[in-house]
Amino acid sequence: NVNRNISSLSEIFVGRAFGYMSGFVLGGLLFDRMNHFLLLGVSLVVTTVGLYFIPFCKTAVLLIVMMSVMGVSFSILDTGGNVLILDIWGHEGAPHMQALHFSFALGAFLAPVLAKLALDTPVPAKNHTEPAFQPPATNGSSEADSAPLFGLPDDMNLLWAYASTSTYIFIVSLFLFALFFKKSSGQEKSKPSAQGYRRAEYHKTLLCLLFLFFFFYVGAEVTYGSYVFSFATTYAGMEEREAAGLNSIFWGTFAACRGLAIFFAACLQPGTMIVLSNIGSLASSLFLVLFNKSPLCLWIATSVYGASMATTFPSGVSWIEQYTTISGKSAAFILIGGALGQMAIPAVVGVVQGQYLDLPVVLYSCLGAALFTALIFPVMYKVATLPLDRQRKEDIKSKKQKALPCSPGI
Image (cartoon, rainbow, N blue to C red):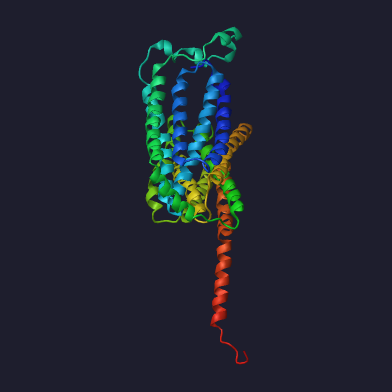
């Protein structure tokens, strides 16, 4: 649409990542000062406007700027959704947290499918000619200067795909604004959260550990989901159709398990779900490394790996709320860890894999991340429960002293 090939548009990912990181900082500050429903509603409106304008962008710079602005709104929504659930339900909000993250997975699965159905509608042949794949050198400076900033896209199906998604988002924003204007309900919800405020003795240490935990977890999730197709075709020798199926089964089991986790969270503690997820991730990634060229093992281990990765993130947020209250700044801080992981780890893996084509670097990175998360969670649990253990010991000691008989001389 902007007459640039994909390789020359790599700045778009940098711009979106910059906006995403900036949004976490901004959202963390605003959520402690503004009404949550209002801020979420405004963020959805910004997302709606950005999605409406993207098909009309005719220059790469404008597209990058638009994606950066949308990155800010995306990260505010990401932070706000987690903070809002914790603010309303507190440590009892585990099923609601799982439902929120299931909606992420469901939307990520459905939106590209619906867009593909729209884009596959027959259109005139002239709309699929080569300009989008020509090297940027063909665009002379005079043409670039005279090119309009906005204009109708050559493929109108592109416009309808974005317009339908943005219209849906705008309708959702209206519900949030309705909740904002229902002031009495907002005031009632704010009272229990203020009364239930608690702060762990090692609050900052817990946040730093969870930052590292999410850094490796999200990095491994995005790395495997991004590279499983290319790994299956270049290293495991699969055909493209099989490799696409392997990619689909990873995200399919990921979304399905997040849906089931809504019910599991009602009867299992978040810590238990994290332990089960860590065991599944460690076992499946180990099998992927040991049997990396066995098609049957790749199918089974990939499905188990996707299911194991599904509940870790929402369970981690629910788990820490049991020991310390998460404010907007705290939520933004731990989410920045995940955002850095999804930027840094896939980038490093891509560079290393390009230098060592005969090694399954993708699988090694996933195994390393699974090992780290499996080791760091017991440390987090010990730090979180250390004050509780100390209090229990003091209570036991006082009870023993009371139970001892007094000596005759006293």
